[in-house]
Length: 193
Image: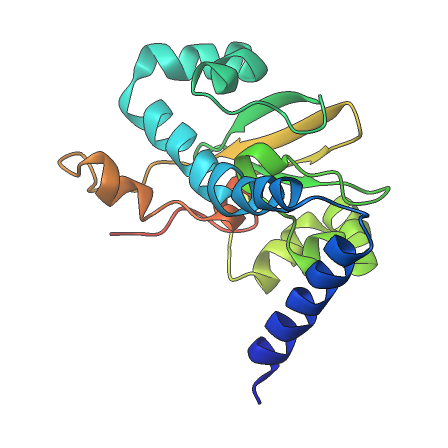
């Protein structure tokens, strides 16, 4: 039995037990599954990025008031937090961390990756961001400034990665394939076509 099958069996057993004991109702479980499978995740943040890349007016709204611009696209904050979007440029590279715990914008980026929650990432992203970037394979020129943004319970950050060169003729679906969760955290760049 593979570990994926083992996890699936454990989840089904836990779900059955919760239902049997009356601790949760089936519609509540269905709602939670739908939330995590269809309404939260990096695909939402990717759509925000692509719209900013292709719609200058939206990009201006996003950078001026990310919370409102993101809600405009139908993605409400799960925990009521405000959002700030910071833009990567050739001169400035932004990285997001939560040095206290693992505050993360679930509505736009989904669940935080394991490494984001780890103490080594949280400490080193703040004290040695260039070193962390190199570990992710992201080299930043010595002339570029690296800014670290510390998320918290009330305020979450997302990076607007630079649009890769040579993507001017690409459609939205093609552009969406270039945006990764890690590029919206700032530890990598958007993928090249």
